Length: 403
Image 1 (cartoon, rainbow, N blue to C red):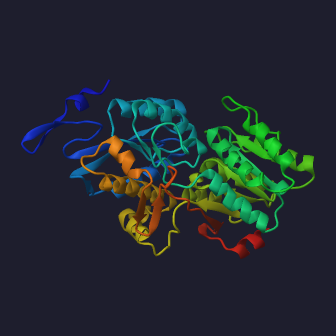
Image 2: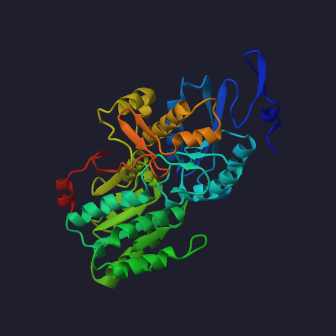
Image 3: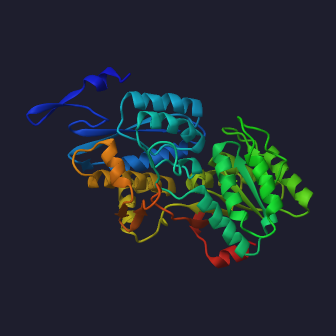
């Protein structure tokens, strides 16, 4: 049931009255989001919220301002379902900027049933490509992020047998492991490694026992203990008689930062990579806390923060001191949403919004988004190197020096 406030709300529009339909009122469009605002990954949810709000601030589209209603799920799928249903009951126009893969796994079927678009979710998982229902992605996938790191490492001399992983033991982590598999399976002499990865991916259920099966260590979502996953990687090293030169991590900043600190404490000089979802600024704080100063690589799916692109300057002006990788992605998602609304013909509704996005091309101040043949606007992946509390773009010589 829709809440009475939204069912009965009537606003003066010209000489007549208009009843809200699909979150569209006479003077506003209501969109929603469900993200971690209070849990262990709250830096990500708060960052996406800040970025989207900055993009929406002062903007009017089709004569209407954008009203962004955000609910907390503490990165907990059961709560995601409840909060998503709240937004559905309130008949929001779209759900935008949700954070996480296991949470998306819950929200997407609910949104699909209600025929509400899912726009710009903060995850690169394959389950959104194409995804259940009406999904519009901004960012590159985890497969693309994993490939960028693994291809560069192998070019620098790392053997596939020396590439390991430490991931969250859920759909998010397994999306990353799938990306690692995709990057390795076309390489020679990787059949046995890929078979081990397939064995790990085949396990179902909530937090199955995936340690000690192959080149992967796991930790349980919303926990911080690194030991078991670390021991799993050491067991793999002992089994195949080599060591992990690169550990590709797929997790949240608190868990990955602590894992890096624990590995350094144990004397490991592994190069540790992290995907963009980990959250660069929050990860830096944890790395600093545990004394990790280098040998950390991170992929990003937004333009370089010191780029001369107009969109970068616009985001810097809109966000001020809050400008960072995560808030910038939120800003880009917000701007993408605005541009799709602007080009749709006539009065806004969900069907026309989706039609406007399909097979379309948008230029966001020098960042081109193309939805030609798929539902993902950007394929951009860059690699950055963490050193002395800062991230800088990586060069070929950086990769050679690392290995």
